Amino acid sequence: MASLVLYHNPGCSKSRGALDILQEDGANFEIVEYLTTPLDRATLENLLDLLPNTPAELVRKDKHFEELGLDPGAYESRESVVALLIEHPKLMQRPIVSNGRRALIARPSDAVRDLLP
Image (tube, rainbow, N blue to C red):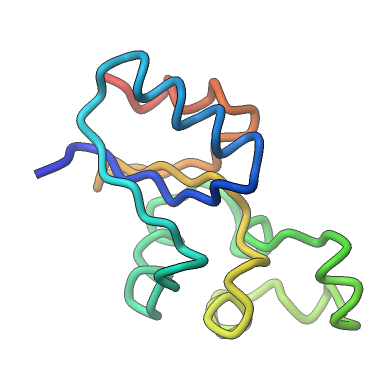
């Protein structure tokens, strides 16, 4: 079983950077391409439990967010963030790395080193 999980978007340079670091380090990890295999409610809830960030920080408030006409203030609670990310997985911050006890948003990419043994 993998010791780390990388929630990965291959189209994201930060996510590719984290992947490169994990590969270079020889880390034992699983890749979850969350745009291909969207995360379910239980997985998102678990990530929120493991992340030190507020729920709102898991949401990318980027061009896509604006194009959808969303209000950032409406996505601060756990429930609203989980519902949003189930409907629009593209809005999840990336990459996220978890070791099952802790998770982090690896921005910058080398932040992934904080979870390496």
